[in-house]
Length: 125
Image 1 (tube, rainbow, N blue to C red):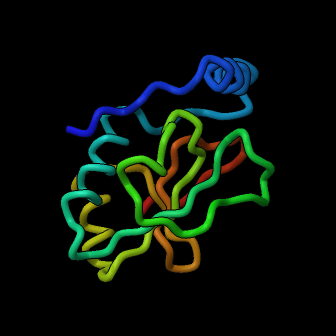
Image 2: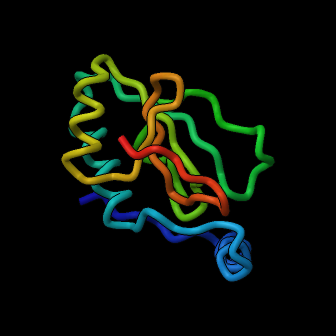
Image 3: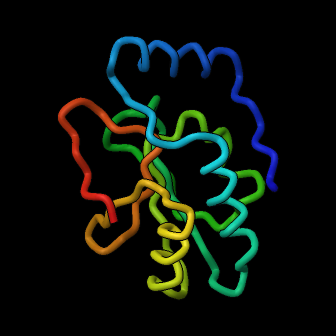
């Protein structure tokens, strides 16, 4: 199983502050993140890619699409959501359901949620 690196102390402190003030609520854990990452790494023939939004970033910011699952996705502790694409949407959705990952479809794009925010109720896939 893919070993997840720990975030820096400053990142941990910022996330803890958001959690203790009720600004965000966790819906993923390291086991689930590792399962997602391993599933994507184990299926290079599907060409899985991601773009993500950090809970610490401005609300309108997300990364560009990226296919480097070994290093570019870390640290997962700050990921509010990650959108996925691959050669097969059916494969992606079945993989997310297989691991019981919290996701929604946003304009047909699977979005896995690391955190939700107050008043936000994404529709789970």
